[in-house]
Length: 544
Image 1 (cartoon, rainbow, N blue to C red):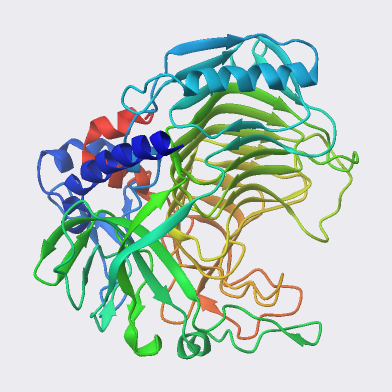
Image 2: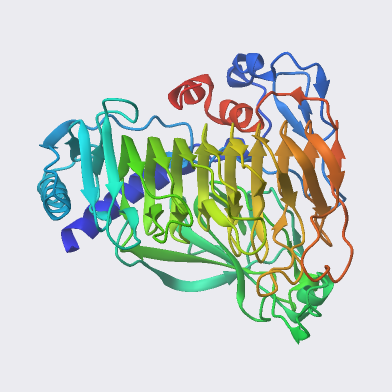
């Protein structure tokens, strides 16, 4: 384990250095050859948004929301290795054939994973375990906890590899370390900005002498009683009982970043922050920056090119697709999952992940729309890209949901959702920030707003979110106090909110709606931002 942590530390340092080197373009608008070479990504849509438009020189210009400088953030650091990096083609180092026996199948797969985990790593990757064509039976999850190990099937379609759920309910795949810790290093520096805007990658601190480029830092902002009251979230009631939104004094949000540059008391981060820091509503404490050391977080783990088979909802046994946590720079790619009650769950310590071409399908069932919904993609981590994925046939679901206090950027790109009755893209609880829903096409609602007393008092579930060139039956886009959510180039019946079971405490106002029912350029905001930051090759690297 000590050797594993050391290897991960070296890989993390290399990744931080790479990200820090590319950080400056987050703050500056590109007018150089990169910007000019990205012109094709504007697409054929003649309309332009007020909020993000062509500056006339090939770059992107962002309109501020207000005099404080809040704006739509650059989402392009979402994804494997911070965006724009191709998934590695790991060489096959072990092959496993199905045995027809659940206990033997799992034991054989885990033995092959252990064998590959003992090999030396090349650029962080040790090798792939190849699953031969056929059906493997699983009564427990496959555990992928060692750095640099890839599980690869022989295809997700006919004639490929199938992992079939057996026994009592369980997840099929667990990716990431068993436990993780982020240990603060040195003293925290107070953020000295009276107001640090959302979307900015530059902050000022009381003392920057201990920071240097490449440092891994955590930026923390605590909830205050003043801020909770400002958000109208201190009077939630459900079934006649008070509900707690966020406890005053708790860490409201934490962002993990790298320092790209230090200039006096100014720190430039390798990716922008997805929320504003207003010292007037933070009890006089605008937040803090502190170096940290990570342990127990695995890296360079992926699962690709296979199918999963569960049981229909209501059959008596519930299975889930995959859990990804305590994992950085991992992926799922080309996964077909059929009849799973639980979908893909990314935990709080999942970051810089790509979930691409993950299709979840369901047989018809008779579950109505009342009660709790299943999660197809549940995201509690950060810098997570869900790309070219789909959910079809579910009776009721959250197609995609961020969880409590998930700090962006998180991106849902080119997603298709077709629930039989009720399905939403809807941040689930407690003030997540910085979500981009880019070119989604769903039945149901895209809801960026206030869940009121739903759940245990979920309240405002999203701020600084964007629905870009997306299509839904309903666009429930609300403006939280001191912030907003955007619907740009998107179509659907507009409303500030999807009503909750109890009635929200303060009727929210409509968010920033621009070019309703008219698609705008660029066709994809994420791809254009990625191209502007890293060039057209970065867009090609991820398959576009």
